[in-house]
Image (tube, helix red, strand yellow):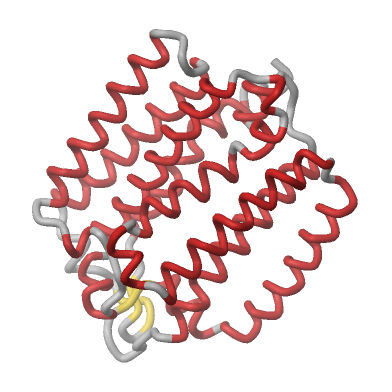
Amino acid sequence: MIFTHQFCGRPAAGYEVAIIGMSIWLVYTADRLFDSLRLDASVPHSLRHRFHHDHRGGLTVAWMIVLAMDTGMIVRFANEQQLRWGLIAVGLAIAYVWTAQFWRAMDRRFPKEFQIGIVFAFGTSLVAWSESPRVDRLELLIATTLAAVLFALNCLAIGIAELELDSQQDFESLIRRMKGAHKKWFAAATAVAIATVGLAWGGMIPMLIAVCLLVSDALLALLVWMLRRSACCSALPVVKPAARFLGPVVLADFALVAAPLFWLTVGGVSG
């Protein structure tokens, strides 16, 4: 909504929000369902992996229904430009799921956390790209790139929280291969914040997008600090046998939506 408002000068249409929302859910759920096929339920694992493992059949049916709804809305409402850019988004999503699940050698060369960042950043800015002749493409590219880095930092923060669980399951994770993950994460987050401030000050990205990026960056930093200061990674409540719920990780989702939700709440769309 914020990308469309800033770069297209209009609120996002309902069908645009619905299509992008369903598409993102389809990518996420497909990834989790493939993970559930190789989940070892006898050793510690996350609650979300347990959920997709236990409800694999129902979620597969739901996935096909949502795919049909998403496809129907795309055919009915999307214009030609949106369809062209949407095909690029679909290609990126398929490439991510394929490399993350079936081409682990590539995953090591180009970590899945950065792949996810690109897929979701392009998805959230897709409407703006489809109207790119009307907008500043360089400005849009810079904003999308910063969003991609932020989303990658989000995934890496979750990787820090779930390091023990990923190791138990032998799930691929950049954090597992990284020494001094906390320090390197904070260094990257600081660099992103400095770059965002500099680019916003120089008028290279819209101020609203810069503020949202900085708020998200700060909240993710709080999450990583909590994970470092507490024992939440090793002393977790057991929800089901061998299934663990990591409370602070909820902040990872909240970090991405807090500023946009505040903007929407105070009437930013109409403004």
